[in-house]
Image 1 (cartoon, each protein chain N blue to C red):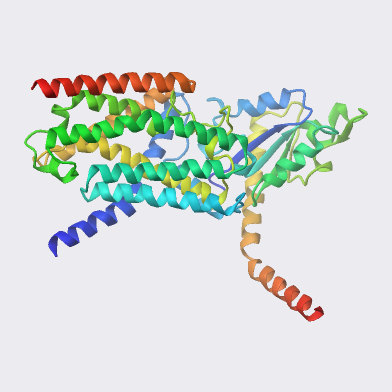
Image 2 (tube, chains in turn yellow, brown; image 1 turned 120 degrees about the vertical axis):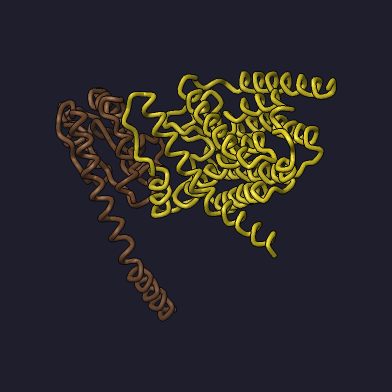
Length: 290
Length: 160
């Protein structure tokens, strides 16, 4: 019963606290970005205002599938976050998360706009760039803890990062793609003027657009939670270190976003595969030697 | 909530680019409209406020109408500069119809040739009131609308 209530609390934390944290992080991102550009920037709660406004707007979709796929994308992203929070199998989290992204791509294809189509194609390329690294990361976890279960990291004597530091570097590299930051924001940019208008979300209005925004909050939390699990071990103080590591990683992503221009898809694919491939291969060789 | 996050679509009719440069100047660190939550979207489906510079002519009439139709309600239109108000110096040209009001209903006029960034921001803020009123109006007569629909359905049913 006790463990059941604990799981229930964790599920509620994932469903309620995760979007609040994700929205606040997005607000902090916009504020820091503005300060880096010597602007005042929007209020901290601006992402919440945006979503509240989108819910009040008229929702016109080009066909019924748009809303259907957007909701499924949101559902599976939430499921991935819930599974991660209750310390379930890492592979299950990753598969749920990938499924959510695939629904998002299908949503892009369901619109008739050419911008939405190209956005969906680019989203697929982005998935191609980061997916191998995420799977390699799961394998690295297995190699260092002997299990795919995330809760296993809490009984280790050392954090996972001490065994797979290079895989962590590779993961930080693809985190830029996952958080939709420059130079890798091919399919949909946070910023207004992109050559694809608003890319994959061009056709969305009202509630659908609001769902995409909330999905992105969950995505942000999921990505940072993966950073988090690299830094936790049996010591309870490790959680403080893990939170600090997440915040540093997020700040670095904002910095990278502001100092790089957007790349074409070929360099994105090339650099991400070379960096993540080399880093993970080197890490596995070292693990094998030890 | 629309007051706190107005997203903007900027369309250049047959403007001389004077007003357009001033509109884009609002986005720079000097004026920084993002502090009001304003974003220049470039996408009619995400926009709440349509900013139009320049006059309406034969070529851009269908474009302006389509952009307006694609915007989800509640929406507002701000005409920026002398040309968007009346046609300005281009009024007598053979291809020019006149101001933006010849194509779509305009809510706020921002005067000037070219309009100043301060005035443009003031115009957008004025348009926020229009948006807010529309939202309140829209949410109120929903019941009326449905009853009217029912009444219509009843009458048509009766006719059949």
